[in-house]
Length: 619
Image: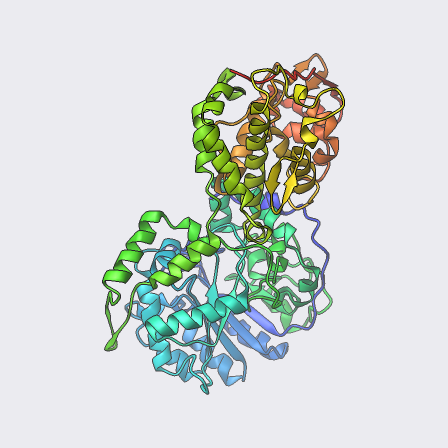
């Protein structure tokens, strides 16, 4: 499994210090009955790392020595540890509050049938993972059958009094997004969970904790493999809220791993980032030393706890929502949606037996359709078909030519697409993910450029001919977008570059000016779900074109795009602060060997610029 630590350790996250220690969070081991995609500890049924009895005894001593209020037990599935019950009963005898981070399905496993009763008998607070209130989403994230067992486990807890009004048995649920997105507003999501779980499954609970997925361990490896790591980090940083720093859990919690080593949080534990104070790195050190005032180990993953409404093991840190709308429904295939639609409409009591209760298995059609209406991405299929038909990639994909006669013949389709984009309101646009917004703006820019060329084609040799001697084609207000008439310059320099929201230098290889010197017009529409991969493709291909970027002796001759937009390559995008650093990331595309790349990074390579060909990129 590919680690993300090297991509996280160089950080600009603010320094923070500890307050008084109130919570000891103990990872009892990585053994678990499940293998969830979002799991930041990579737990599974095959893990053997488990805490010793000696350390369990030491935990009880530390609870007394530090006068700790809360013991937070996690794993893996902590209930699978042979000393789990001993630790719980002993801690409760000391008057310590105990939290069990339960995956719910463990309550239905053979050999653990009495676990729910044990938790109730000892008034253990249960924090249970339930990523969504629909079968499809839960099973997708946690494995087939997980939803059914989770519902059964919740019924078991409810029957014992957990989550009931007036009960002293607390049942809180945990939500994790399915993909590389921020959680939605916790208060609203909690209301949705309570309404749907009560209506469809007769389940009650106390609170919902919306947790941000951390870009580490299994989830980190998944988003790396999908080329989503950097966009996800950009998302976390773009939604950073400084006020959340005062409430992050690491200020008052210490995390202990199965070996008794100390970490500032469970996430640092998985990244093997110990507490900075070398004199306090083992559980035994807490018998005589107070960690209050110590520095906290930080890295870029810390932005996950401070993005938007904030996130901790206790859920959101503030009540304000973020401007990042969750598009979780888009991860479900149309076939799955129709399957749920049909099963709900025709068999709304898809049933299974649980303590004599008949439980509905599917979420109602109205919930799915409402979610689809709220979170659906913009449909770029019309523009995509025009590109597929009329744009030909040349020179191995490093350039492209446009069949403007074909585009002219399909003008009604282009008009239809531009009309559809013009109807998108600002509020609708704001509800999309950052990647979906940027893909939308790039597509509108490129479609608008084609539309502008067609107003004079075939009587022009260059797009510059449209502006005349004193005008500029890029300053003409002819595109209706987000409530007003806009020019191509307005879209590129204000909405994309000027907003500071995107910090994406690769857009210069995606927006197309209808010229030979310009990076290729891709023959596919950009989409939010594929944006990072598409931007990498167009950037790599453009830099690999030796007619526009090449090394001659000790001079790297590159497109004047880098001169015109120099500042866009100096914004710490993915750790690069200058053109040389950006180009070094694409050294293989430029044909540079290791020594040449080293010289480029060190500033020893002379930079020159090639000529820009403004002739029309026509077929």
